[in-house]
Image 1 (cartoon, rainbow, N blue to C red):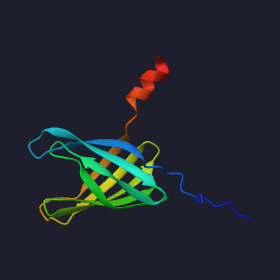
Image 2: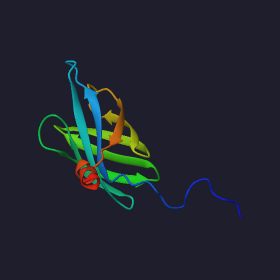
Image 3: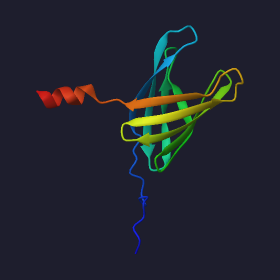
Image 4: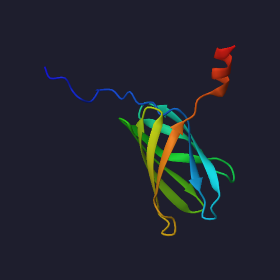
Length: 121
C-alpha cells in the first residue's frame, strides 16, 4: 500500500477572523476583516471594510486548503480564491467591474485576545 501525499480528509479549518491591510487610491490604508464559518465544505461569513455594514459571503466552498466565494455590493461581484497555510491565507480577487483591478492579498488569522488574557491570569 502506497501512502498518499494528500490527506483523505481536509485538515484545513477556515473558521475564524482573518485580516489584511489594503491601500486606498488616496494613499491611506485600511483593514479588511473576513469572518469565516466553515461547515464541512460549506463556507459562510462576512467581509468588513472601512465603510458600511459587513457584506455577506455568497457561494462559499472549501476544497482541501482552498477557499472560493463571492461578495456583491453596488452591483459589482468580486470573486475570491484563497489558499490557507496555517494561520496565513493568500487570496486573489477578481471583479466583474472593469474599473476594479485584480488584487493579491495576504490575510493573517486573528487570535482571540480575550482568550489569551484569561490564560495569563
